[in-house]
Image (cartoon, rainbow, N blue to C red; front, side, top):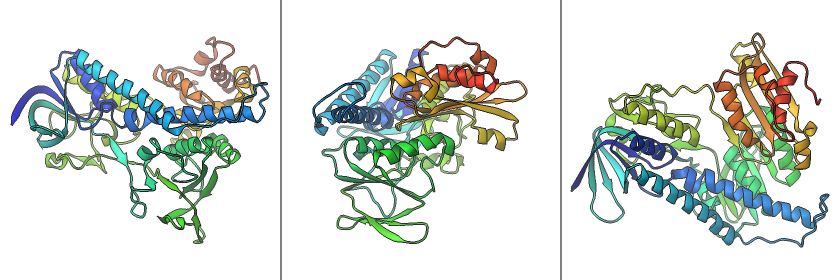
Length: 464
């Protein structure tokens, strides 16, 4: 068996793994990256990027349909149709270009990429088996685990046939007439709303009593309003019992009533779990934090020179968290003094309207015993939102009452994902309400709502 020796071996070519490998290469660390499928991992290939592409296509199709039925803007078009196969080809083209770009960046950084499936022999040795050809044994000084996560499969709804995960939902050969989405978290609602815009009849089943149960109710109300307006049928406080093609999805309500939802396709989106099995991880006997690999502030595991980043290390399971952790690991190995201790990690839900949460919400601040003030500025009073026909939603700020230190931002509305960077930066830099309120914001932009929220918290908003 061929053998390779390197200083750093990275298992997993997703956002965390490839960023760690690129940064390590930039720092002169001999690095080998192992990936069994396509570079970019779940996020680039079957998650973040393709889902946003499908969401955009669905939005454009819905807008064309809206204009066909009479637009206040004066635009008139013929009744549109969509070629979903072409949509998927366009989406796949974006994914292919980005994955190829990751490969080019790795080569530029001097990283050796091995295509194959890794199996851990011990903390210093990994065997890589490609789909074809001879296996390779890699010996390393440092081992970085970046194996990501996978969709949770329900026992009564095994993936296959008409029952799909988000992966299958992002590559449809055709559009179903009726889709049942199991789970009203961000993945289920993002894709459910996209399919509804494409003309599919959509029903959502959620065990909790409201949509997006991980977010506070005030923030999710505009999303609930949009779901109901679009015709998505919600079955909240309900559990799924099973599925068969003849009767559809069997559902039980909180009152123990049972009914069936007709479905040509079923999307199961009840969460993700860390990928910790199937590659010999158990042989290392690492300390675990529940189902996750336990790490410290430098992403070290309980075994010397074995590191872990991304989804296998816990929530939030977000690509940008994994990327930041990857940089930390590479720089620590290079001898730099780095720690992964962010003040805030932004979370974005790409529903329509979008939802952004950074830092503490008012409820979280109160639960922590903090005396805080919060204030919201509605997009109904924002000129740019009016010109975008997107006046639903708001920006909200949370700050300490005594010194006005900003602890959190939340926003819901069209395009608010682009405000996440400003929200996060203000918290990382220790900004106070006066800092944001006194910063000149360009007019007319959605960002003015950020300034106005800070002004309102100080008691002197201008435009409301």
